[in-house]
Image (cartoon, rainbow, N blue to C red; front, side, top):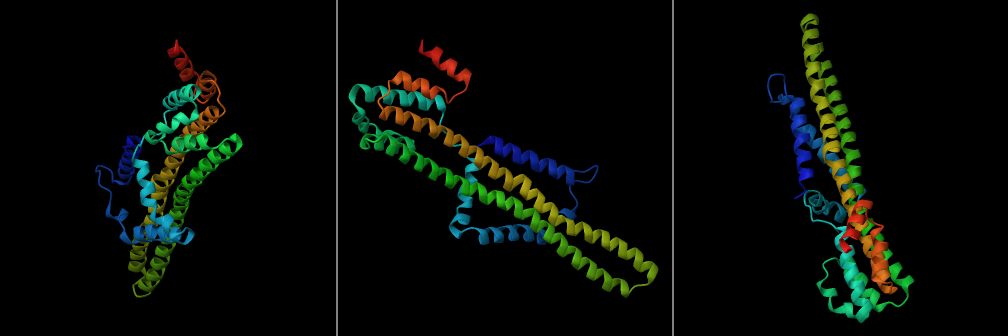
Length: 275
């Protein structure tokens, strides 16, 4: 589980709940709970998403959103560098075809496919194009999920504002009808009271839209982007390692090249560990 996502969501909800509550209590007034307003925001956001994207992409949102709460553990740079160094050493001593025996046991699909193609492809440029295509294809798939949530984050406040406008229209037209049937003095007082109450109810939909956009949809998109960037970063290390193995570079040279991907302190610790 990704505890940072869960903790952040809990803290956000608790603080919003505290801000909604009346003084001296921790219970928000019933005004903040409006099923029609919530249905307008969620229903409108979902409908706009369906219009904007293919059905299969929208259905896949649940699976994509679950990744935000699950910490699968991406590629650890030093672990993959050490693993690639072992493969490089084996390829140098026994030939690159000897890696065929271990490819089935490799968990990372990109690394597995890359090594299999490195054994089959003699042209390093074609191998690099294959690795780039796989990387770009993965990045495009990730970007699609992020884009949907970013757009949902823009739809939600818009439908919140739409719900507020709808509520104000209904409130004003209803108030005009009620005022015409009441006495002037009593009608003015009742009118103001009803107007303020109705305005508060109308603004609830804007509240829902802003809350969902800034505490759910946009943060989910940001977390997906961070996860994607982390994964792509690890795959770039793998790509550089596979190309080095294919070009029969010395394992020490390859290792030094891959260490440029990590920060200075990690690089120093890795070099010290060798001696």
